[in-house]
Image (cartoon, rainbow, N blue to C red; front, top):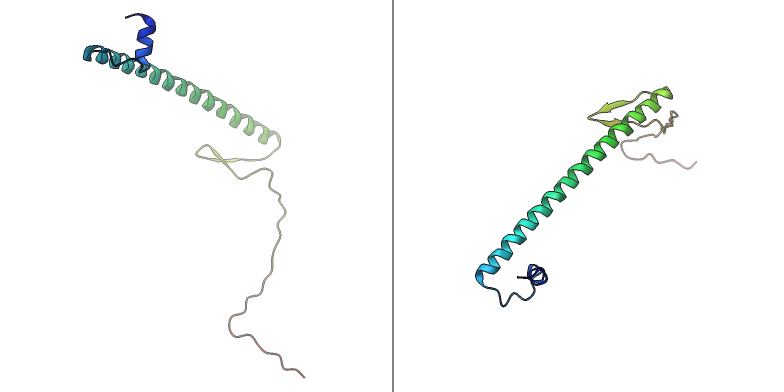
Length: 109
């Protein structure tokens, strides 16, 4: 089978003239191709994850260094920062009064 005809058959074209044996060989070739593609894709994902983890580590170290430079402390829990150095230290209080029971009535005088 020439290359052009094989490509068309791998793409699913002109299969009507194929014998069962030819169809089985095409099926096997497609399975091998899919396995190669999936393996390569998995490797690319692993590589990308490793790059991102290294970047995360560098950024966490830089963040820690910058916070130390500013004299701020950080707390880390499971690798994630808790709190924010940009929060204001000012607080505001709201005073409310809570009354339980029936409201009192005012007598008009």
